[in-house]
Image 1: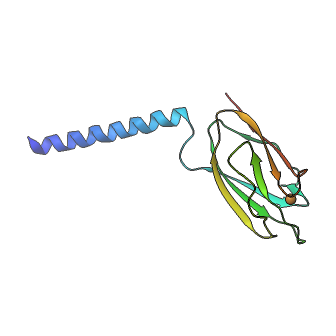
Image 2: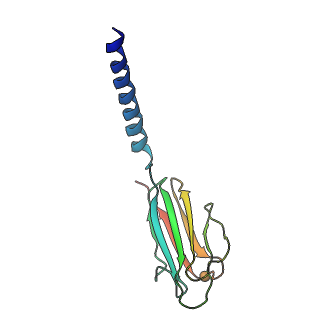
Image 3: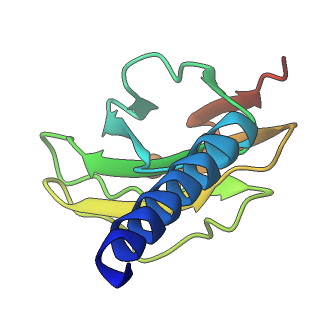
Amino acid sequence: MKRAFVPVLLILALAGAALAFVGRRSEIPSGPARTVVLRMSDYTFNGTNPTLTFEPGERIHFVIRNDESSPIRHNFRVVGLDVPCERELQPGETREVTVTLPRSGEFAYTCCTHPGMGGKMVIEGR
Ligand SMILES: [Cu+2]
């Protein structure tokens, strides 16, 4: 009697965990963060200061690298998100920061040292 009971409980527990996981995935993209690489060179991000688009509530792992070939220092921030200016990056240095985005909105990413250097981040609803 006891021997049959334990596997049944185990199966029920596993099924419950699977359902909970599926339910969560349908609401918000979760799991590992998506990596977005931004290279700072010639006073731009990725050459063109592109508009970056994201999904609501997405988790993003930003990798910001100073790729200048001359001794120009840069400093990354996102206005309106919890990504403030930090210490300046020397050429070759990298800063990594992970954020969970809100459900909607538009934000500006920029270099604290060079205010004209930067672009837009747009969260696209469905
Ligand atoms: Cu800069």
